[in-house]
Image 1 (cartoon, rainbow, N blue to C red):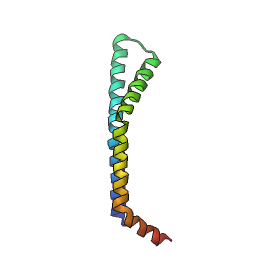
Image 2: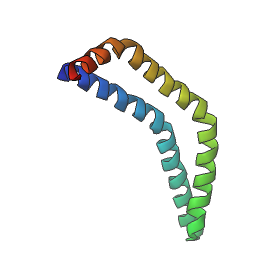
Image 3: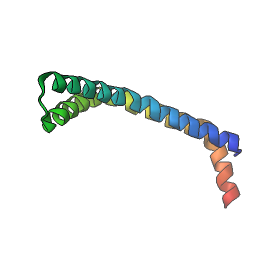
Image 4: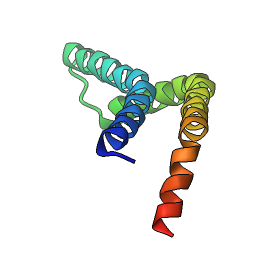
Length: 96
């Protein structure tokens, strides 16, 4: 297994991680921005106002996106194992 090959594997893993986490992180940022605007307009500085809506909306969207997240992770893992299986077996044979 060459260093270029390992870089490609890590790049693929990072891309899948970014692909999975980006919608949730963007959602959290938008919700936080909306709550901060609401707080500045109404001058309500209650700490629970920032956490409770963010957690509830985040959990709801996560439950909706969970099947897609799992499909993406399973697809990447399957692709990795199917295409890289022979190379991984060869690497293990070299180690032993």
